[in-house]
Length: 305
Ligand SMILES: [Zn+2]
Image (tube, rainbow, N blue to C red; front, side, top):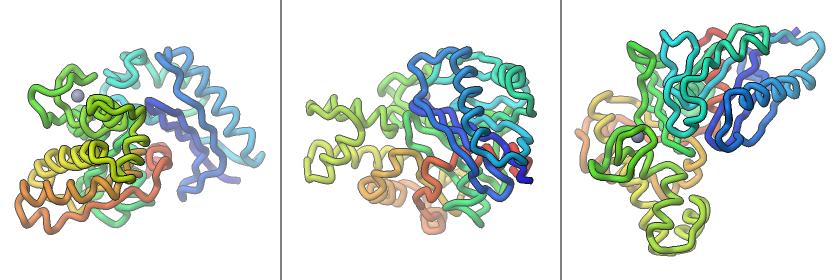
């Protein structure tokens, strides 16, 4: 018999699910696009359908022990499973996710912030395994952050810690879904790269188009990508001074542009942060890629994080 948890990673673009055992083995998977303006009812229907798909390909003697659900919401510890504010999925603001899941899937439910889940996953089985103090940055539809402090996920007194995507890097900058403006999310997410490409006057559609143009030597696209690294370096310099971490892990879809952003990140942190923590910190790329969040929330649902 294998004991597995159903681990879900809800993102602004995709929802992924996997059945994961306590050694990190992935035994089945399901994936769907996140519907535009997804309603709470649609989310639960989709989750139940994906759970059915995951379970149908498991061996008959498998036992599901819990559901772990990672979402781009601050996972308030005293919320009882009610989601707070989701800047990138506002139609789910205030949804009682834990209750809705329990009423359709007869298992204990563990909720986690998606970026904290990615930090836990990478620390469990990926790039930061064996390191005790880690900043994890997820560059996707938004910018997520997760902190590992002294070997454990750091969630803060209310469970809302790690929201580094909403650190301000431009005081009068672009408005952000969180209600502030000039957040790093508006300068380093895939969404932001698409916007900055359009603002630069060229007909790029997506972050991938801009990356490819930059790789091909297009100076405007190259400048957009260099600025992504520069803004990340400004943000990270402050965090490196504050936390003196051993490692910064860059994950999420935008980690694919690693070769264009790591240089400007390194230059910026060396110009801005103290030399001792800068010399200590290692800037690393995700090893788990799209599976970081799923594995992290599986780790939590198995009671291992
Ligand atoms: Zn923000």
